[in-house]
Image (cartoon, rainbow, N blue to C red):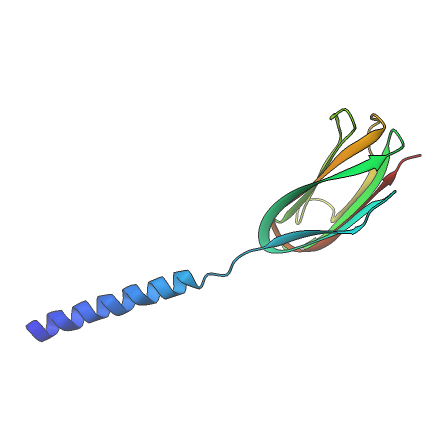
Length: 139
């Protein structure tokens, strides 16, 4: 009987240790936003393997509008959100692309806003794939 309880205890220890090792080796998810051009235009690339991140950039816009475009190649569910605020903090654009819901690209002109330093926020949620964006002064 004692040998049987020792075997059961050993089995529980092995299963427990295996669970700890497997949980400890879980893959870290990532998402990154890389600015590729600054100056009169603000361009960037996005990549991820299921992670989420958000970053805000300051961009000087000498015009009252901005031209923008973005695209994604992502697995279902991943999203890429672009929010642009004018120099007064008013939202002039709030656009989200979600893979599997609508188009994989979008472009246009922001609403009119105040000239000066605009805030551009890029947010990736559960993003698995890649994409890019570009913002330039409007006409």
